[in-house]
Image (cartoon, rainbow, N blue to C red):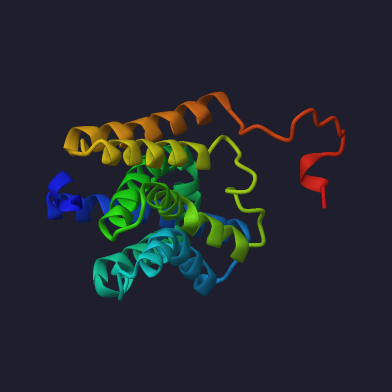
Length: 220
């Protein structure tokens, strides 16, 4: 089904672009944490490939694409090398990286949902794996870097746009109308939602009627 939405070359190219941008984000966090070169490479690889690897293992698409496509494995290392030598310059274009990251988020939540559905999962389960594909690498990155995963404390709504994109894809699948146009609508919806959330600093809802004055980052 994925190859009916995109040509194999286009899908592969889009995947590599998304992987590269996710890897940049992971490598930049490693630099901020003062990790060594191995840590930078590891966070780049985990951030870029973790979500897709998790999805493929769950649905039984083995060996995962991360281990069968040389480009998937090397692209994060290229991103890590760029950040290792040029991290001040890369950090200065962080806003542009965030925009590309939002595009990768939109793409991966749609392709992840579609691939899970192709392997026989139900619509709800497929959407859940679409979300995992989009944000799973970021969760692993945060855990390795000793950060609270963004999935659990959704600053500027990172996970919510992915949920919306994955859910919209599942709706299109349920009505058997998923095609190039509708999948693009799902990607653009998640992408646009993420951009607006960044622009206006939207946050996901916190606990109802919470009045604690304790600062968020100091809570146990």
